[in-house]
Amino acid sequence: MSLNSLHDRGVIARYRSFLPVTDSTPVISLNEGSTPLIHSPKLSEKVGRSCEVYIKYEGLNPTGSFKDRGMTMAISKAVEAGSQAVICASTGNTSAAAAAYAARANVTCIVLLPAGKIAFGKLAQAFMYGAKVVAIEGNFDDALRLVREIGETEPIAVVNSINPHRLQGQKTASFEIIEELGDAPDFHILPVGNAGNISAYWMGYDEFHRLGKASRRPTMIGFQAAGSAPIYHDRVIENPETIATAIRIGNPASWDFAKAAIRESQGAIDIVTDAEILAAQYWLASKEGIFVEPASAASIAGLLKSLDTSCASRAYHADRFPEGSKIVCTVTGHGLKDPDVAKDQCGGVIPAKAERSEILRLIAN
Ligand code: AN7
Image (cartoon, rainbow, N blue to C red; front, top):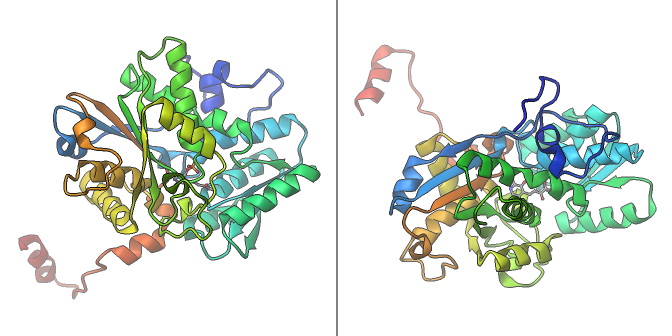
């Protein structure tokens, strides 16, 4: 890895030779990427058999999600092509990233969001970054259909993951993991919504494997929310529902890519319920100090489900994590994105008088 100057950070600077950029591509970056890969002693212990579990904490990107990796590419390429406006449909994180990078590039950003189904933090971001925020009567799939139609006829760059530059940027997360671990992990677990990220990770792992930078490619295991699981059920879900609004998607754009990644890696796609997602979200924050949004907790919920021998419907079994396996779980977005869900699922405050004895009572119990 080369050392970059203070003004030359971010995934394009770090992985320029693996990305479709040239000297004439203006690099629009917010120093995204290089996120921490955090060892989880407690998850490692749960898995057992000397396995090691690592959390790729993508919530520490500039706008708080993994979307920044793809957006630095999509906006840089849009500006290179002369676009003065960009558009996307989003469940929230894509719109936050698009709005931020568009602001930096001085281009207009229009975001189409499913009305009433966006986590509050993400909505605040789109407003503050100066996007034109449109609330669509309908779900994400309806919004994406509209964006596709508009992109076909109008002079505006679509920065959803149907834009191939997005997945190119997102594949850099695999590169970072390989460089940090010294090889690819044995298993990679992540949440799946539009299925772009699982496809991008697989591309990245495959590319570094072909270049001899990794000796293997991991088994890819994706988790969808039970009420929004089109790939798992192998059919479009007309009215997807889940508390994990980021992955409330019924007709994923990268469906075929994701299926190929799962097939080629001998992986699996499985589902986790909203209750499992919320339990995993709270467990990760309260046991390991890592606060992620509900959709991100699907990967942790999935790992825990795969270990649960009482669960008959597991698509993936812990019996298949061999001794000494390295397992990486991507957690895709920061917990502060969705303060309402966090607030609703926790116990609340302990009322007390401003007296010493009141507090000492808590230490004793
Ligand atoms: C936190 O922002 O689709 O399977 O419009 O925000 O690549 O879609 C977000 C997706 C996982 C799923 N975790 O990733 C959007 C959007 C979080 C997310 C996903 C999303 P993909």
